[in-house]
Amino acid sequence: MQRYFTESSAINNRFAILDEDFHHIVKVMRMREGDQIICVDPHGKSAICVIAEITDEQVAAEVVQWIEGSSELPVDITIVSGLPKGDKLEWIIQKGTELGAHQFIPFTSARSIVKWDAKKAAKKVDRWHKIAKEAAEQSHRTRVPEVLGPLDLKSLLKICGDYTHKLIAFEEEAKQGEASILSKTLSSMKKGDSLIIFFGPEGGLTDQEVSWLKEQGFLACGLGPRILRTETAPLYLLSAVSYHFELMG
Image (cartoon, rainbow, N blue to C red; front, side, top):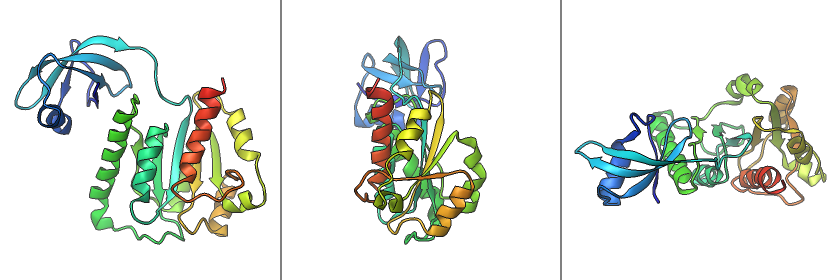
C-alpha cells in the first residue's frame, strides 16, 4: 500500500494530499476513488485511508483506521558527512533513511574534494529532501529525516551542544584496534537520547578537525577492524544502532 506524508493533520478525519503527491496518486499510480493508501501526518501518526474524492488540485483521503506503533529508532541519530564526490551523499541519505537516521548534515571538510556551489544550493538541497522523503515512504517510516544544507565546521560546532552523545568515526582509531567507545556509548544511551556522529570525506578527517571536535566533547571511535568507505561507514553505524536497540532486546 502506497504511503504519503501529508503537509497537515487530518481535518474531520480527512487528509488533503497536494502537489507532487497528488500528481503521483493521479498520474503515476492512476488511483481512483475507493482505493486505499496510508497517510502520515506531520506528527508521525499514520492511518489507513480510502480515497474519498479527487479534484483538479487535491486528493481527499478519509481515515479508515489509525495505525498503532512506530517504525522509528528509539534514539535520534544525526549523520554528519564530509562532502563526498559524485552521488555518494545521495546514497548515504537514501540508505541512511531506510536504516532510521533522524537527520543528515553535510559539511565542508578540509579534505572534501567537492566544492560547494552556492548558486546550485537550493536545487541540490531540494533533491536531497526528495530522496529522503521517497526513502521514508518506501521503508514505511513515520517521519522524514531532516536534511540540512552543508555547513562549515565552525558553524557545526555551534549546534553540537544540543546532542546528548557525540562521536567521531576516525579510521586511525580503527587501525589502532579501538573497539569499545561505540559499544559503551550505545549501552549508555536511553530512549529519547540523541547522537551526532562525524564521518570524513574520502580523504578522512584531518588531525586538526579531530582535535577541534574533541575539544567540544566528541569521542573518537573505531567501526571495527576494517577501514570503511565514506558512504559505507554511516550505514554500518546505523545498522549497529538498530541491532543494539531493536534486535538485542
